[in-house]
Length: 209
DNA sequence: ACGAGGATGCTCT
DNA sequence: GAGCATCCTCGTG
View: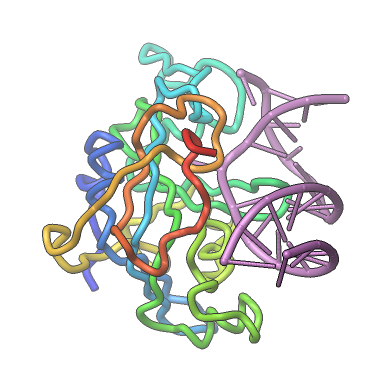
């Protein structure tokens, strides 16, 4: 499996979010072997986006550093870097940083369909869990793939954690909606998912909540 | 099947 | 102190 390159992630965030649907997420786990999931749902977050952690920050080109304070500063990192953070005090969410260094943005990986390593994912998530519940949400897939803040700031363009080619996206219908679980910029249709796919998360988009 | 509410801790938008 | 890019359990029908 050849990793998707830095160039792939240096593109505009919304384009990357759409292009990642149908690709694979791969984790070569030291204990669990190779874990692979097909990405079925993503969301885009950009620098000028009120719902994004980078929205109140900017980049000082002279200084070559982020102006302002906050966790969102890491969204200005080089494309292909991991942005992993804790939400609701419990769940890790995996994002991949987009656009050139100095431009803030990332794509949230919201759901995948297990392709390889399902037994290990079952072990991580709990033995009595139904298969569809293993990875049909951003917190769930992080737990199933054993992803937490130890990956934050590392690159996602080489093992052990990376993205790889999947079936051509043109073979599938990619639908869009408002993003899930946000209170700002709910009008932006920046969630991308495979229409009618069973592993897409069940939550309701924020403009119809 | 579905909805309500709680868990739990970091960030400050 | 409030809000948060979530998930699970426990009610009710």
